[in-house]
Length: 329
Length: 306
Image (tube, rainbow over all chains, first blue to last red):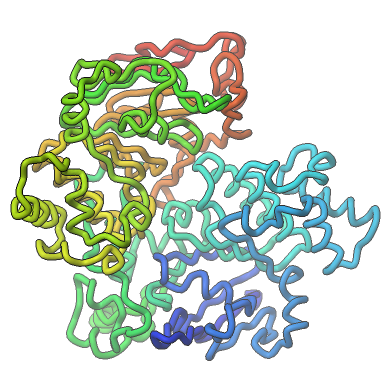
């Protein structure tokens, strides 16, 4: 097997505020191979976006700081890079697409200028080759009549097209890794379907690895090879998408899958998850999901559960799963 | 209870709503689904008398709204209430919860202060909050609890119909189930009717008993909710439902990925408004707008296929 493209080990990103230390990301580890799509799924505040910002070292300072862990891209530790080196990594090796294309594009510059800037900076192209490259980037994302579109401004595009333009910018320098943070949340469902189909096409054609951040399990089911479920700054379960949906090993994953309405079937009643997501400034000593967990054991409140393997590449952090594994042996 | 006939609303040149006829019956949940710009929120605002239709009529218990007396208006305001999407902006941060919840009670309600407080405590309890949480301010509550407060406010006047505009879209997934279940319970206990505006097709399926699908300012299909989901008739409904992602990786069904975008509401295409994107377009679709007619028993669709 080829070595993974990205390895994240025990990543910790904390925010130091007057209210105390917010442990937004607290010991996240995962890896990703070239051409693979990993979904990071969780509720707001679970640490999905901060994980992504940490990968490109764009955590808002001075409040936020990466306080521990390693990020290896092709074996190189990004934590040891200088800011100048990081600038070269961003855009050329790791690219990002954000939720709201209206705010990630500059309203005062034409689309052509904005894509051209990235290509010029990272690839050093100028003049005709630059223009050719920009047109190719737009065509790949199915922007019709790209020659006419170059001179237009973001407000002249619809929401779906803007998201395709910012994806064109992200993919223009053929990055190895694309981080898409809720890329379709502001889009309508039929436009979301268009966008996701296109992203899949690009991934198949270029072999780019994708981290897809979402709170929508439908998107995970349809698009991800593997999924990592986040809760309170940690990955509580990870595995192949099929495994996680068929045999969810963490009570949080199980509860989430039961509490969601489904377009496919009329559910008589949704099984609620009681309570609220925890306050990240004062996390309980044990498992942060314990106060809401229907399967809570005494030890859940005292110590964070270790990783337990419940299948090939399928791992959960849960005392109940630990007990079940030990019993099975 | 509420019936719209040929409701039309233009904002200048923008045709937000164009000839919509729809009826809300006592005790049911009418789900109105569609994408942004389809006119579903405008329809909700017309239902709430927040917008006056440019053309068409709205009937409340058989009386046209245009012919309302003062008493009719009061009765309407008591009977029809609303819950909006974002509980962070729909509650005034400077008001105590008890005042927020009591606000829809008209000043001439004849209730004394103690009776108002009693009623407020009652509805707070109904939505699963503590009776005495009325003395707190909205910021002391989480998003899900705030949506409960908004629901309590809607319930305080003993309404028969509540218009829910994207009631769970702003909430986290684990909180959505709590609110959807609460709405369902309240409906059973109080015999409420809902109009639920939603772009979330899964949430609509959970709550709705009847469904209306909107596209570009018009209703393209209506029917009993489950029937529409299992056998969508209009090609737009088919595309919309196939774009909604089921919750299981193996549950893939034939995908209709639509090309193109929602039309410009200032210049909607001639004929059927969906024809430029329709996978089953025929010659007449570009020139003649289809009538909204019975396509199957109990199923109405606006499409030349039927």
